[in-house]
Image (cartoon, rainbow, N blue to C red; front, top):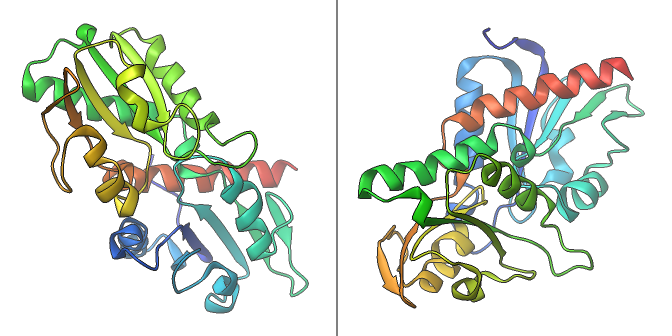
Length: 263
Protein backbone atom coordinates (compact mmCIF):
# COMPACT_ATOMS: atom_id res chain seq x y z
CA UNK A 1 0.00 0.00 0.00
CA UNK A 2 1.46 3.40 -0.96
CA UNK A 3 2.13 5.84 1.89
CA UNK A 4 -0.58 8.33 2.76
CA UNK A 5 0.20 11.91 1.65
CA UNK A 6 -0.24 14.53 4.38
CA UNK A 7 0.19 17.84 2.53
CA UNK A 8 -1.43 19.71 5.42
CA UNK A 9 1.18 18.48 7.91
CA UNK A 10 4.85 19.01 8.68
CA UNK A 11 7.35 16.27 9.47
CA UNK A 12 10.17 17.10 11.88
CA UNK A 13 13.00 14.58 12.17
CA UNK A 14 15.02 14.94 15.38
CA UNK A 15 18.64 13.78 15.29
CA UNK A 16 21.46 13.93 17.81
CA UNK A 17 23.97 15.84 15.66
CA UNK A 18 27.44 16.84 16.77
CA UNK A 19 29.48 20.00 17.08
CA UNK A 20 32.60 17.95 16.28
CA UNK A 21 31.65 15.49 13.55
CA UNK A 22 29.62 16.44 10.47
CA UNK A 23 28.89 12.79 9.70
CA UNK A 24 26.72 12.58 12.80
CA UNK A 25 23.87 14.58 11.25
CA UNK A 26 24.30 13.40 7.66
CA UNK A 27 21.86 10.43 7.77
CA UNK A 28 19.08 12.55 9.30
CA UNK A 29 19.61 15.40 6.82
CA UNK A 30 19.67 12.97 3.91
CA UNK A 31 16.54 11.21 5.16
CA UNK A 32 14.70 14.53 5.45
CA UNK A 33 15.68 15.44 1.88
CA UNK A 34 14.51 12.06 0.55
CA UNK A 35 11.14 12.31 2.30
CA UNK A 36 10.70 15.91 1.12
CA UNK A 37 11.39 14.79 -2.45
CA UNK A 38 8.43 12.39 -2.27
CA UNK A 39 6.04 15.27 -1.57
CA UNK A 40 4.27 13.39 1.23
CA UNK A 41 4.27 16.32 3.68
CA UNK A 42 3.77 20.02 3.23
CA UNK A 43 7.02 20.68 5.10
CA UNK A 44 9.95 18.48 6.12
CA UNK A 45 12.61 19.62 8.56
CA UNK A 46 15.62 18.05 10.27
CA UNK A 47 16.58 19.45 13.70
CA UNK A 48 19.21 18.42 16.21
CA UNK A 49 20.32 18.35 19.82
CA UNK A 50 23.97 19.30 19.22
CA UNK A 51 23.88 21.46 16.08
CA UNK A 52 21.69 23.91 14.17
CA UNK A 53 18.87 23.95 13.43
CA UNK A 54 18.14 23.10 17.04
CA UNK A 55 15.10 21.14 18.15
CA UNK A 56 13.91 23.94 20.42
CA UNK A 57 13.41 26.13 17.33
CA UNK A 58 11.50 23.54 15.30
CA UNK A 59 8.02 25.01 15.64
CA UNK A 60 9.27 28.43 14.58
CA UNK A 61 10.67 26.88 11.40
CA UNK A 62 7.51 25.13 10.21
CA UNK A 63 4.05 26.67 9.87
CA UNK A 64 1.73 23.66 9.52
CA UNK A 65 -1.15 23.29 11.96
CA UNK A 66 -0.27 19.60 12.45
CA UNK A 67 3.33 18.52 13.05
CA UNK A 68 4.72 14.99 13.36
CA UNK A 69 7.92 14.79 15.42
CA UNK A 70 9.96 11.63 14.77
CA UNK A 71 13.05 10.92 16.91
CA UNK A 72 15.64 9.51 14.50
CA UNK A 73 17.30 7.70 17.38
CA UNK A 74 18.35 4.05 17.52
CA UNK A 75 16.52 3.32 20.77
CA UNK A 76 14.37 4.55 23.59
CA UNK A 77 16.08 6.21 26.52
CA UNK A 78 16.77 9.51 28.25
CA UNK A 79 16.88 11.54 25.04
CA UNK A 80 13.58 10.30 23.63
CA UNK A 81 11.70 10.06 26.93
CA UNK A 82 12.90 13.23 28.64
CA UNK A 83 15.26 15.53 26.77
CA UNK A 84 13.39 15.89 23.46
CA UNK A 85 9.96 16.43 25.10
CA UNK A 86 11.47 18.98 27.50
CA UNK A 87 13.28 20.94 24.79
CA UNK A 88 10.29 20.91 22.42
CA UNK A 89 7.56 21.46 25.02
CA UNK A 90 5.85 18.12 24.38
CA UNK A 91 3.42 16.72 26.94
CA UNK A 92 2.95 13.24 25.48
CA UNK A 93 2.08 11.51 22.24
CA UNK A 94 -0.29 14.37 21.40
CA UNK A 95 0.45 17.94 22.44
CA UNK A 96 -2.05 20.75 21.84
CA UNK A 97 -0.18 24.02 21.84
CA UNK A 98 -1.68 27.33 22.95
CA UNK A 99 -1.58 28.52 19.34
CA UNK A 100 -3.93 25.67 18.40
CA UNK A 101 -1.33 23.49 16.68
CA UNK A 102 -1.33 19.71 17.13
CA UNK A 103 2.05 18.06 17.72
CA UNK A 104 2.22 14.28 17.39
CA UNK A 105 5.30 12.63 18.90
CA UNK A 106 6.13 9.19 17.49
CA UNK A 107 8.15 6.32 18.87
CA UNK A 108 11.88 6.36 18.01
CA UNK A 109 12.96 4.85 14.70
CA UNK A 110 15.03 2.17 16.46
CA UNK A 111 12.03 0.67 18.27
CA UNK A 112 10.20 -0.30 15.05
CA UNK A 113 9.56 -4.07 14.70
CA UNK A 114 11.42 -4.14 11.35
CA UNK A 115 14.74 -3.08 12.91
CA UNK A 116 15.56 -6.60 14.14
CA UNK A 117 15.31 -8.00 10.60
CA UNK A 118 17.32 -5.06 9.26
CA UNK A 119 20.15 -5.75 11.70
CA UNK A 120 20.16 -9.45 10.96
CA UNK A 121 20.30 -8.77 7.20
CA UNK A 122 23.45 -6.74 7.77
CA UNK A 123 25.07 -9.68 9.51
CA UNK A 124 23.72 -12.06 6.86
CA UNK A 125 25.43 -9.99 4.14
CA UNK A 126 28.79 -10.50 5.90
CA UNK A 127 28.11 -14.23 6.29
CA UNK A 128 27.30 -14.57 2.59
CA UNK A 129 30.23 -12.45 1.40
CA UNK A 130 32.82 -14.35 3.44
CA UNK A 131 31.39 -17.86 3.49
CA UNK A 132 30.88 -17.94 7.25
CA UNK A 133 28.87 -20.52 9.16
CA UNK A 134 26.30 -18.51 11.16
CA UNK A 135 26.08 -21.32 13.72
CA UNK A 136 29.75 -20.67 14.48
CA UNK A 137 29.41 -16.88 14.42
CA UNK A 138 28.60 -14.32 17.12
CA UNK A 139 26.40 -11.40 16.17
CA UNK A 140 27.48 -8.68 18.59
CA UNK A 141 24.87 -5.95 18.80
CA UNK A 142 26.51 -2.69 19.94
CA UNK A 143 24.27 -0.06 21.52
CA UNK A 144 25.01 3.36 22.97
CA UNK A 145 23.57 2.79 26.42
CA UNK A 146 23.69 5.40 29.15
CA UNK A 147 25.77 6.09 32.25
CA UNK A 148 22.62 7.33 34.01
CA UNK A 149 21.10 5.04 36.67
CA UNK A 150 19.27 2.16 35.02
CA UNK A 151 21.03 2.67 31.66
CA UNK A 152 19.09 2.66 28.40
CA UNK A 153 19.90 -0.71 26.92
CA UNK A 154 16.33 -1.97 26.77
CA UNK A 155 15.94 -1.51 23.02
CA UNK A 156 19.18 -3.31 22.21
CA UNK A 157 18.39 -6.18 24.59
CA UNK A 158 14.91 -6.61 23.09
CA UNK A 159 16.35 -6.64 19.56
CA UNK A 160 18.99 -9.19 20.56
CA UNK A 161 16.29 -11.43 22.03
CA UNK A 162 14.30 -11.30 18.80
CA UNK A 163 17.33 -12.14 16.66
CA UNK A 164 18.39 -14.86 19.10
CA UNK A 165 14.94 -16.48 18.94
CA UNK A 166 15.27 -17.47 15.28
CA UNK A 167 18.32 -19.60 16.14
CA UNK A 168 20.34 -18.68 13.07
CA UNK A 169 23.44 -17.41 14.88
CA UNK A 170 25.45 -19.44 17.34
CA UNK A 171 25.54 -16.48 19.70
CA UNK A 172 23.79 -13.11 19.84
CA UNK A 173 25.38 -10.82 22.43
CA UNK A 174 25.00 -7.17 23.41
CA UNK A 175 27.56 -4.59 24.48
CA UNK A 176 27.39 -0.85 25.07
CA UNK A 177 29.46 2.28 24.87
CA UNK A 178 28.28 3.83 28.14
CA UNK A 179 26.97 1.01 30.32
CA UNK A 180 27.85 -2.57 31.21
CA UNK A 181 28.57 -4.86 29.54
CA UNK A 182 30.98 -2.47 27.82
CA UNK A 183 31.95 -2.96 24.21
CA UNK A 184 35.62 -2.58 25.18
CA UNK A 185 35.23 -5.90 27.01
CA UNK A 186 33.78 -7.74 23.99
CA UNK A 187 36.44 -10.52 23.93
CA UNK A 188 35.12 -11.73 27.28
CA UNK A 189 31.52 -11.64 26.05
CA UNK A 190 31.75 -13.75 22.90
CA UNK A 191 32.16 -17.50 22.59
CA UNK A 192 32.60 -17.90 18.84
CA UNK A 193 35.74 -17.33 16.76
CA UNK A 194 33.98 -15.24 14.13
CA UNK A 195 32.34 -12.03 15.35
CA UNK A 196 30.17 -9.55 13.43
CA UNK A 197 29.81 -6.21 15.20
CA UNK A 198 26.47 -4.61 14.28
CA UNK A 199 26.08 -1.10 15.75
CA UNK A 200 22.64 0.02 16.83
CA UNK A 201 23.56 3.58 15.88
CA UNK A 202 21.86 5.87 13.38
CA UNK A 203 25.07 7.50 12.18
CA UNK A 204 28.74 6.66 12.09
CA UNK A 205 29.67 9.89 13.89
CA UNK A 206 32.46 9.89 16.45
CA UNK A 207 31.31 6.65 18.04
CA UNK A 208 30.78 4.70 14.85
CA UNK A 209 33.80 5.90 12.92
CA UNK A 210 36.38 6.68 15.63
CA UNK A 211 35.52 5.02 18.96
CA UNK A 212 34.33 1.58 17.89
CA UNK A 213 36.56 0.38 15.00
CA UNK A 214 39.82 0.43 17.03
CA UNK A 215 38.20 -1.80 19.65
CA UNK A 216 37.87 -4.41 16.90
CA UNK A 217 41.35 -3.91 15.46
CA UNK A 218 40.07 -1.74 12.61
CA UNK A 219 40.55 1.85 11.49
CA UNK A 220 37.83 4.30 10.43
CA UNK A 221 36.06 3.11 7.30
CA UNK A 222 37.31 -0.48 7.54
CA UNK A 223 34.79 -3.31 7.82
CA UNK A 224 37.18 -6.22 8.34
CA UNK A 225 38.02 -8.89 8.82
CA UNK A 226 40.55 -8.15 11.55
CA UNK A 227 42.36 -10.84 13.51
CA UNK A 228 42.38 -9.78 17.13
CA UNK A 229 42.22 -11.52 20.53
CA UNK A 230 41.94 -14.89 18.78
CA UNK A 231 38.88 -13.83 16.80
CA UNK A 232 38.07 -12.74 13.26
CA UNK A 233 35.97 -9.60 13.45
CA UNK A 234 33.81 -7.71 10.96
CA UNK A 235 32.12 -4.36 11.60
CA UNK A 236 28.98 -2.95 9.95
CA UNK A 237 27.87 0.65 9.41
CA UNK A 238 25.16 2.49 11.38
CA UNK A 239 21.54 1.72 10.51
CA UNK A 240 20.76 5.28 9.41
CA UNK A 241 22.28 4.52 6.01
CA UNK A 242 19.75 1.77 5.24
CA UNK A 243 17.08 2.76 2.64
CA UNK A 244 14.43 0.97 4.73
CA UNK A 245 14.64 3.66 7.42
CA UNK A 246 12.52 5.96 5.25
CA UNK A 247 9.62 3.50 5.26
CA UNK A 248 10.09 2.94 8.98
CA UNK A 249 9.69 6.68 9.61
CA UNK A 250 6.44 6.69 7.63
CA UNK A 251 5.24 3.65 9.60
CA UNK A 252 5.97 5.43 12.88
CA UNK A 253 3.98 8.46 11.69
CA UNK A 254 0.99 6.31 10.72
CA UNK A 255 1.07 4.39 14.01
CA UNK A 256 1.25 7.59 16.05
CA UNK A 257 -1.61 9.15 14.09
CA UNK A 258 -3.79 6.10 14.74
CA UNK A 259 -3.02 6.04 18.46
CA UNK A 260 -3.55 9.79 18.87
CA UNK A 261 -6.85 9.52 17.03
CA UNK A 262 -8.01 6.72 19.30
CA UNK A 263 -7.08 8.57 22.47
